[in-house]
Length: 386
Ligand code: PLP
Image (cartoon, rainbow, N blue to C red; front, side):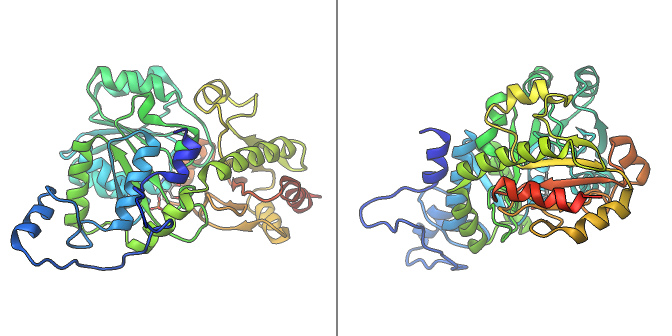
């Protein structure tokens, strides 16, 4: 099956009289009439579920679906993207190592590395992953490398294929946060990554109505991550798993529309008043364009950013003038939203760190929705009119 068809069907084994849409199973525990049968299910020798923290049918379907879409053996769904990232890091690097992470990354990920992993003896090293010489040097001393397919918030794209080759050569696991791209636009495992993670809160769910995370990879790594997620109590609940699978069914059409709309807005925004710079990896003057063009042939999704002259005051004015667009701290939903990294996704960075990345007081991140592009462009145009 092609990816669009997989998105519609993955994770289900339909037989005669199966419900076409999955039932929601909220049971915390299943009953057994035979001790041997219970033992066999716990050991994984017989299919079935025994306790909701260990497995659940709705979580199981979501895990299988995302694994299928990413081309992985197995997956583990967790209560949030951060829980997924935590499980993935500990499955790939259970003892303290140097973690090389993309310099420009989601602020929550940077905070997790600094505030939770560094005190345990890990070292976080933030490197510009678009600079392959810097990556080559950093990989020498690394025990894990973490990249984002499309970075948060400025949407740059690094050469995942080249980095995967460097990490493989040195036996260093490579973890990719594929939240912004989704498996419909990029499948990092096919490019050589070891594990892929998603904040399913974003595009996989797609409707801003759930918080979830998923990691996918080889069976052994996922087995370790699943056991730890169960021990530490971070699995995804059934209803959010049910919602995420429902969202996944329309991923292909949504990602096409998000991609078209973000590029249309990026082009239009270049001539809007007060806009100093537009960040979109498929604008032909973007430094990411050559790599993005190769790695994201189907589009770059709905994320983009821009720098507004006039800093925070100008951003505030724009937000107050919006009609259709709203200010919200998340992304990846069907509706167009803007976020202000200084106080949202990147508030854990110091002002100097943000400045170094190019995230300034006028930087706005846009999650371009699936509305009619003319309406989206018109709302930005009126909100930015002098
Ligand atoms: N990774 C990226 C790129 C994100 O943008 C986010 C959240 O904004 C996360 C991970 C964390 O996901 P969650 O909020 O579902 O824990």
